[in-house]
Length: 485
Ligand code: NAD
Image: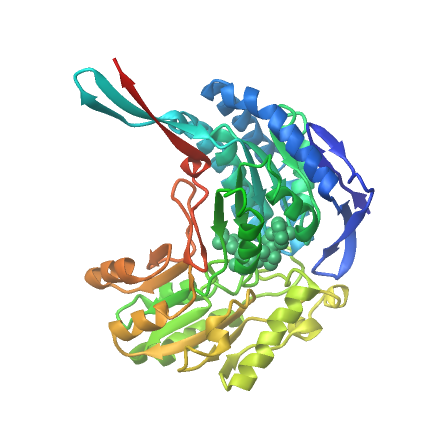
């Protein structure tokens, strides 16, 4: 059993209280690592370290900071296999994704942030008169706290920290208690790579160390990826200090298929690239509402069923596996609870619904994984978008399909949601594509593709899906200067 420590001020430290939390492998249900259960004393130490490091880090010439970010990029290249395996074991995200998609993307993301460092100090200038000019400068906030969920720690951490650090902030990362090990292994790898205190990593419960961090007066900005409920709690915690915050939250994203669509591409985009594989639907942008125009209703459902039938649940560390487990018992109860709600609400099940060891189908190795948290890909249909399974984020491999006739109807159903993170539109009609890009109330719209989030383009939501994004500029604030000559 490995035991991990926090990274504070360049040192690897146990929680001040000595307490630990168990980290469970969700594919087996067995404890495999211990992580610090940090509290207010550890938050205090991390803030002190980040504050102490800020003057030198922010004053460092931009290209000096870029050099450090490149060293982080190299760590992701050199330790790709190890980090991917650790994350897969810790949260069940399949190795196929952590190793083949996430890690190569991280090297690129950190290199890109290093290349963008000079942009952080760019501003505008205005000639106000013959002897008067105004200009703006972009400055870092200071100490930034990044709070992340458990579904893709390496990617979510990098999207925040690479940009915050590039802009000249120092960072404290609070990973999710269900899956902190990849971040704490990274802490070991980065301890000597960045100057002490520039990046601090502190694990523990949200309501303990997380709360202490976000309300700390020495913290200048908070960036949360997590649930809408947590965003509300954090907003209240930072209200007195008017602390700037950025929120990337949940979703109930519509994936809309028109009769003129390329149905081969759409069927892939509705299933493997959207909700069922990879993270078993535990993805903020999961296309959990599938809207299908009536002329292609039967054919689309048939194609989705055929693709879902080939999804292979099992050992997430096996590269042949295409879908892993649900992350924790709590999340498993939530997802299976929605299966019951769906049945009670009268939604019709097209396929799926098995969970627990039954979902594994008794194949080879099933016994080893019988204690894991499995839910098979599941699809319901309904004509009523007001059902709870259409309105509430399930965060699992459970989708619901809804038929529509006209463009207006599709738009009305799509926008009838408290969330506004993302949407997919499958059509060959360019005018319709542009209309939906304009009229969908979401932060992201994908046309004839789904779940593409390339670094370099901002990613964020509207409504209960949050506000702001993790671009480099979002980690700077503008100062205006006017000079009278
Ligand atoms: P969560 O909100 O419960 O936890 C997220 C993080 O917040 C964890 O690190 C947790 O410890 C911390 N936290 C909880 N309470 C806190 C408090 N009072 N103060 C400080 N920190 C606190 O979310 P979750 O269940 O771990 O993750 C699932 C949610 O995240 C879903 O709603 C999902 O849609 C969302 N998500 C969004 C994105 C996105 O980019 N929009 C990406 C992934 C996940």
